[in-house]
Image (cartoon, rainbow, N blue to C red; front, side, top):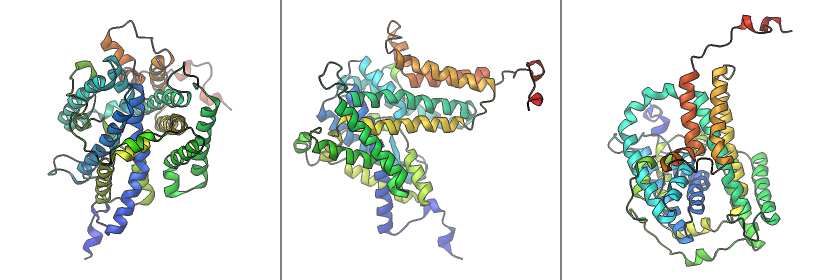
Length: 411
């Protein structure tokens, strides 16, 4: 009997050369998405460049730890033993920004974000064994609506990257910045259209790299922080101060909160990469985790990322966040939208989610705890989708005989 053939593809150990190549491919596929959350949050809560660099290092380092835990498991108790690459989730970006800014922004605001992350992470760990029994509350009409809302809620972030943070600045909405963003987006689309396989998978990353080089050549980039950054940096727990546990703010995973970073999720681009290559070994993903930890120890790498011009990020952001919304549309295609109840779930949840995007001050006269929940389009849209699904999923369909015409009459 061939024992090698009996090993499940997830548990296969490949030669070290191939393992390193495949692992590095996973790093490249997720790198842009992994550092995007710190970039978005840092600008929104007014962190300094030095704090952003530290945040990116902490992000990569902790992504590596979480990925290794998922791939290898700790005593078969923590971790799924699956080839899952962990990264900071965009789902929590808007709530984190609201929480941080509600409590003063900057490092003080991050302390409340981390407190929420730790508390909710422990809570999720406790209830994880019971979560499978709740899956009936998340049919495609709910998950599709939530994913669509996430993409639409993040779109203004990309637009603000392009336009600029300060409306009173002389270069706000500068045509050169808008043109640069359009060039970056065009580069991404060309790569996505022309290339196949691995290059297509990293089209966003290539767009960022090429766009940054062009911006630097045109004098639109500033890399002085790279020279000032340290060669080696260690991520220490609670570097921004001890967490503050504010009840309404509590949301996601504990590990990120301890190590100065954010809630995690399995990165879809890496799952797609596994499907594309057919290589499913969890040991490759574990090596990817080690590489991420190593990258997190070098602040100069983080400084390079932090120096990418915002208009370049905006061009790529339009593609990234648009893809999130498109994934929501794809999920909704599996929902039974011919049912009136499902149509209403999508319509109302998306509409409610767009209220704080269209009018940011809509809930400004409500209590703070209401603002934290409702000012996040993602949060209020998700809650609305879940509740409406429970309310309308058994709603009776119109009696066909009472309609002005019957389907059988159509020609």
